[in-house]
Length: 240
Image (tube, rainbow, N blue to C red; front, top):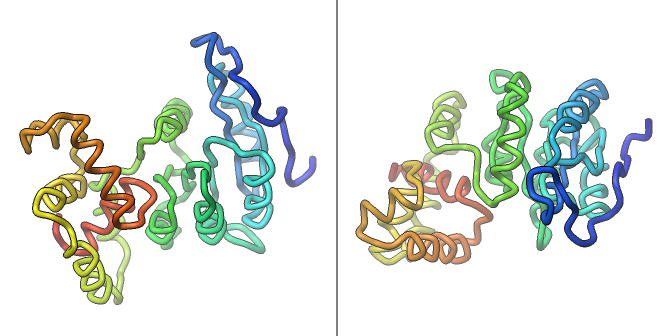
């Protein structure tokens, strides 16, 4: 099998699915240097009518080309691969406008670079032994624009990884957050605590649409891709 393969046609109009006849399936790409892992994920997705594997790659360099050629909605990205690793590939892919969401695949105890992937724009991570149903649920979640990594999980990672540069990042994060208004700061701290939009709205006496607007403006103001990066910034600043 070729290292990078297009498994369906490029996206056009909406495609029918069994669950929603008017909506096209989520376009998923798989990046892993182990062909057995890629094959297993294809088999897993094959039983789900609302997700389809449209491309795959065996390393990070191929992943960047594949993402540009096939425009998947979501990429499952391995971390440790030859030539170009998943961290570098994530940064390169997420730097482009309209980039797909990326879920990092990791063994957690072995990979010490997950935080770098999240700071590079990944929307979360999955352990490679995650139950199949949870993998599919994660793909659907990030395809809707939500993150699958809670700040509680971020804290586990922060506790797990010895970081001699924490003091420098704390100062830089606080400088970035210093420009926020008091209300924006209230919102960003609650995002860092892992609160949902509904929980933030209830806690601050705001409507959910207002909270969504605040979060969107915060991401733009701080030049961030998603709520995971926002939560990481809050934790770097030691505010949550």
